[in-house]
Image (cartoon, rainbow, N blue to C red; front, side):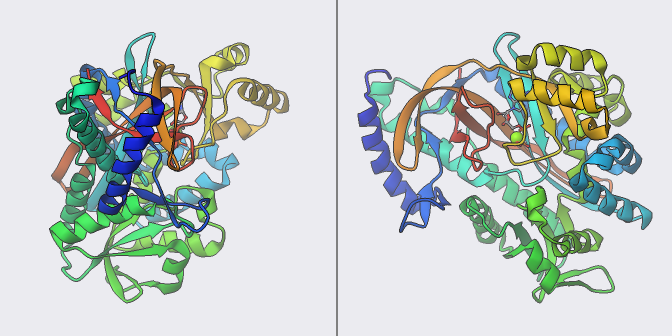
Length: 464
Ligand code: ADP
Ligand code: MG
């Protein structure tokens, strides 16, 4: 591998890249390249070695996490109670909880439930434990592009087999996009209105739209399900409910609402967006996610589930409980004074997280220490907005990364995301399976990990 110079790598990747850009839309919309509306998604040139046992572990536990989220989502009181202190200090979470409370008050039951999740992990080098970073229940991104990167890597290993001496067969099949589309189609079938559409809720300024289009294209081609794309503001302007609860947007009946927006405060610049969110929640459409699935995926709930005897409330099977618990890193609320003291002394061993999604929100190192000291001094409730997490340290390895057509060598760490789909109608579980993966690789000096947020690149897995 090392025989190849960076220059040669750039040469062939650009060639391959150009052909693929046409074939596969492996692109994101760029705000930066002048005169060009598109730029390829940042990628790693070759797949990252990853232990097969950990890979299997992450796949095996995925359906259990699906079931766990579903059970937690049904316990409205647990969600409200666990987030009650956070509600006091976090206006965004508070609005989500208000919608949730409104639904609880009206006894609204979501018979058809669709989860398109991604559980993210890092492999801690010292302990060799695969530890969960977070579980995404809203807008789990890159099911489309991740498949393409696995394919690209496999084809590169085939093409340069003699030089690389790597077996393309060791890159696991990745059909995240196909399996997500299938789950969506099954939820759509359960909704049982052949003329209804899937509505993708999108941000006004979406850079990662081709990942979303990829999914909708598969949905259309394989399952003949149409989709429309609407922002929250458009849904407020063009949406209404029929007396039977059918959601109508822009003249279309909506069977499934698929959120690729709505997870960040910036997605709700006015009351209009919140009205749209409530309207969708009140409707009979299948929400991916429903408000309770959304809340079940918050970092606060992740931390609550890691407390002793909490998993036992939601799962019966002891082996399942043990498998889930094995993935939990240290997680604490900020009312644990021993942990606060330790985190101030050793801030490098912790990550502090607010109830936010989408990357770039966590607090590390000296900033973490200062924030904790300040909150201790002020002594108000602000600390309820955050959780503390054990910092995970994955092994560092060299890699060649490509961003905006330029390659560079760096030392990297990786985060494995395993997609999982869940479809249920009342007591009938229709889909519950792991379905593909996303490897994200970032330079080891970066704390954050989002691809769209500009920290990481898309990668795939080479099982060892
Ligand atoms: P977000 O919802 O913003 O994606 P995450 O919990 O996934 O929040 O954190 C963002 C990134 O921060 C992750 O992708 C990962 O790179 C890094 N990170 C998060 N938690 C940890 C941790 N406990 N140890 C090391 N890195 C972490
Ligand atoms: Mg994340």
